[in-house]
Image 1 (cartoon, helix red, strand yellow):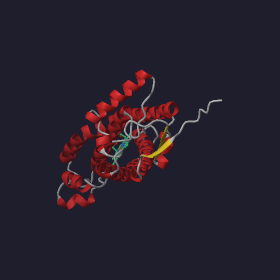
Image 2 (spheres, rainbow, N blue to C red; image 1 turned 90 degrees about the vertical axis):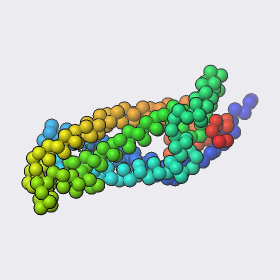
Image 3 (tube, rainbow, N blue to C red; image 1 turned 120 degrees about the vertical axis):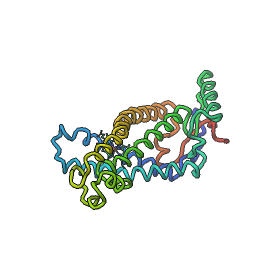
Image 4 (cartoon, helix red, strand yellow; image 1 turned 90 degrees about the horizontal axis):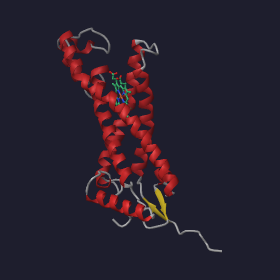
Length: 247
Ligand code: HEM
């Protein structure tokens, strides 16, 4: 009887920063989606004005954790291990094109090529996710100022809409006290494209998260390299030498 057991090699891929970022990000994004959905449906749910302010404030506090975590990961892209770096994430460069060719040759020959970092398709998806998350962080931080006068731009927005400098302190969310009507309208016009972007990117992000999960599950089932457990342990296993192991 032939021994069909294959020799598996374990590789350390995701460093601690990437793994911690990933799971904090998952928790924050889930919470932001849940509270964001409640904000969107506040009217239908019969939420009072104070309730809306509370929902938005909670959304913003979670948003701060989300934005700081994301900012750290964007920096880590310059200093992390080689799989965490932008050079291994940003698509359409020479290295990415070489990965695509190798993947296509492997697929045609019926011998799929393994990748330690993201495979070429995963790489495009991860780059898109970072882009969408960054847009939500930037637009969200501006909206935190225009909507509930929270940092980092809350005081600047208060000064913008105040009747004069003596009324700045009295300005509260959803109240007209101390607010100059014309300046307030100007501010609302300024925020319109920002809230529209935050709103539409939310739906694009939902679709991208769904595709990301689907792709991870399919890759795990087909390639069996332990990509799900790798986000906990950092390690992947391969029977054949992965394409990017000798970079
Ligand atoms: C993955 C990240 C995020 C998602 C999925 C998300 C989702 C949403 C959704 C669905 C809404 C309701 C949109 C609307 O009312 O038209 C909303 C509103 C809002 N978000 Fe976010 N958000 C994210 C990140 C952030 C961040 C980082 C902040 C700030 C720190 C933030 C601040 C706000 C504010 C202030 C509003 C109220 C805007 C308004 O209704 O006028 N969001 N968000």
